[in-house]
Length: 214
Image 1: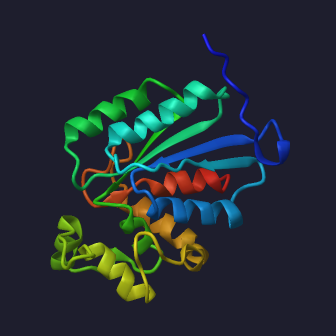
Image 2 (image 1 turned 90 degrees about the vertical axis):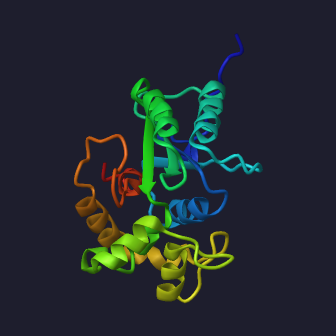
């Protein structure tokens, strides 16, 4: 059996807790977490954002990316490996399969946004608790409204001035991260569920882990 390698952690500190992130999106999530890594990462946490070249973005493929990392490196007991996916287009059966893998390994974390990651970005700049039922319905369905944008992408773009999934200013959102956490926690009305069954995002848990608050 091939011997696993020790992962080189932040500034060579062996005791740093490793937080590994594999996301469904090729760019959107990575832009955000790379920005956090620069400016909001706790001193005893090392964040590693995994990148991929293919368009295979299913929850199972994201899990496989994490699994390959675990096969290559030694993982310590307190290390966390996060699978970051959207609920929107995936069937419950596929999500359940990945959730089961996570339940069987204490290092794995299943981080789902319903309907998608842009909800987390939106929570930095708007409180959806103030939305009308009609607005909540539009957010939940998140229908594509033009050739580039879904309802949520367009909303983030309108509120921030510029947004594209591969080009946006995550650093400008980070000063509002605490209010985003607070809003996401309020949305998580059933935290024992494997993922949010209605509008919600578990990204706040990953963010708190990176900041050393979890």
